[in-house]
Image (tube, rainbow, N blue to C red; front, side):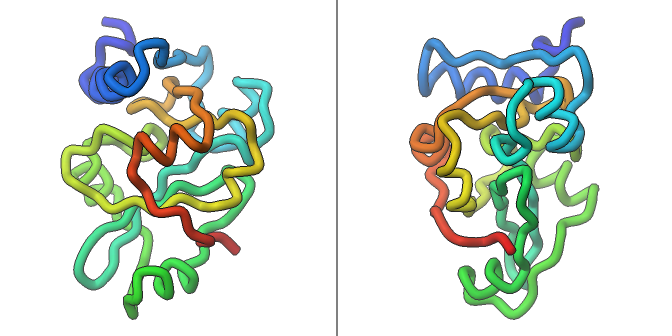
Length: 159
């Protein structure tokens, strides 16, 4: 069984192909569990790697798409959502809500409907790379298409 046959990767690939028939999942030789590892494998800037981070608020979960060279700002996320509490979701919550394991969380193809915030600093790059359901799988997309594909809200959510 290849990585492309794995269910979480197939979930991402199906949505990508529906969005744009030319889109494809890229399988990396090395695991890209961190933005740095992914950038090294892809030969791109760390900031062009999209980190998909799940946060828990008092009443829901929110997925934040953050540039690989930035840190999520809990204060900005709380202010944007108008909530008092926000924290990183647990490993189990990430798996249960998104259907992905940490290191392979994709911006698309979640098991549950999740609201998405997109870090506006991602706009700096011509192309972005996001996880595709497995630490060795990514997809390449531009900022405009990422926004269309995820229906995320573009906000300033990094420090």
